[in-house]
Length: 468
Image (tube, rainbow, N blue to C red; front, side, top):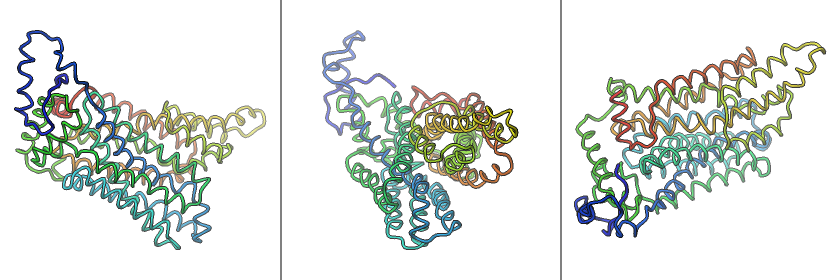
């Protein structure tokens, strides 16, 4: 993509009208900026605003995920739920998310990225209200299922929307904010959930949805989706709003349009089409990263943090609060699993007083390992699969492929959270060694299979993937 240059045209200029005023500037015969070019600056304010609005959906996602952990005792007491009924309430979230994942791509393709976020916000809001007014398990489960559906849609559409509107030099950083806001939402729910009633916490969950809905009235739709729909006037207006009035959008617009026209000549993709040779590498990358993310143990560790700390001999309340704070920092999945596994190995294999020092070290190793793990996940594997997924799929299969990848992600979330306690019963330290092995293989997968996307447009990424 060429460097940004500035023009005096209005917002609704055609591609030819945009190019025309640049001809006299090009005839200057040198590479220096003209006074006209210097008079404008690259305006990324709308990109930042659009990203902020979109990641309100990510924060809502985190609020949904973090709700059940600090509220378990109070909900069971107030609504008179058995442990089995509360387990259903907690786990039904992932089933709602799976349904959301299946439908998210189609919704985003048919009614737009903004439309999909509106639908998701509506489900989350309805779900929170159902939980707030619940007097028994039925409304609680319906509400949890609805918020799970909203999570499933958000998990796909937010990173895709940001990737499609961001300039290539900002795309990776802006898409990473998606994961940052998810873990921020989880952390805030963990912390304020210890201070407020669970019904009040449910009402607070509506706030990011409201901010998102208001913000969607201001920001533009994804220019790439508009181009795919053949809405030329809206496409030009959206891209110009995102790049600033003074920016030359002609080359970027032409590149997007040419790529869309090429894709429009291809047949509409169905689920089975994803396994065609020409799409196989991008699908392998997208789905493979989701497998690496989930089967590295994140949801087993996240859902059962308190019990891990208790089992190792570390105070659960203190550990959970530190966990919530450190979710937004970064550093070492494999190391975190090995440290935690070492803690349980020392605890299980040190049976006499001679090795009292090892027993004393076990709780510290456990809490260090968990915090290193969650920090590393938040900064790395938590964000990377969603960033790459938003970039790697050609736009004609983005709906179907995105739904498949998100479905795999949520299935992995359910599988890991369901099997965690069984694995811990089998071998506490073996569980974390297993997760460490998966994360080590994930590193190899990223090095060998995942391409570098930094500094490339989405169209250039597709070309690179197809060429390899």
